Image (cartoon, rainbow, N blue to C red; front, side, top):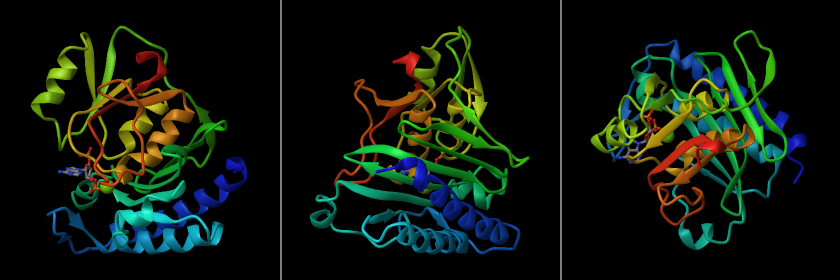
Length: 255
Ligand SMILES: Nc1ncnc2c1ncn2[C@@H]1O[C@H](COP(=O)(O)O)[C@@H](OP(=O)(O)O)[C@H]1O
Ligand SMILES: [Mg+2]
């Protein structure tokens, strides 16, 4: 598949969803709660609909797995060698708390590997994208896009961690890194901050699902980073259960 030729179309889909999400963000939106007690708003479902329609326009043959879509039986999914993995809004808590640190996430997975990803932060007016063999890019709030790359190794490690999920295991991991400084970022922006060289390590010793990480994982890979499980093997996608194992994201030099 020619990633360079489909990237502009995927970015366009993410931008359309982001625009709608931002409109809803600026209203007095209502918050409901799903079965697992996680929050959901009209923005999640509106973004899901726009993304599904847009991706179908890019290719009718690639199936879509979205956090806000219907559950697709493993019997069907186990035959997928390529699929879109979508989180219409990652960081819904940040959305409802109006921190601005939420993202729209679209990934393309091939044989378990995130090979293309687009992550937008509508309220911050930032968009990140990357694909295998194509490098990673940030379009900043001025509207200009430029190539991004992970930072060189330094003694002082800038650690990004979830403010909502900073548990004892994560704290212990961070202490062992030696000289460090905590950098705050919500949702999948944690991977993106590493990809652009603003942070060095993101330990996630807590739950996430595949759709929370796929797109930003692809961006980080394209920027010279990696995401590995605690046993050192790569984090993979398309499992029967969408829950990710614990992982660490960082520049390649860390592993
Ligand atoms: N118990 C749990 N099981 C699965 N995922 C969880 C979880 N607790 C938090 N998460 C995931 O962590 C994401 C938020 O991460 P962070 O705190 O780093 O911003 C949430 O994304 P959503 O907002 O898309 O639901 C959610 O998917
Ligand atoms: Mg999510």
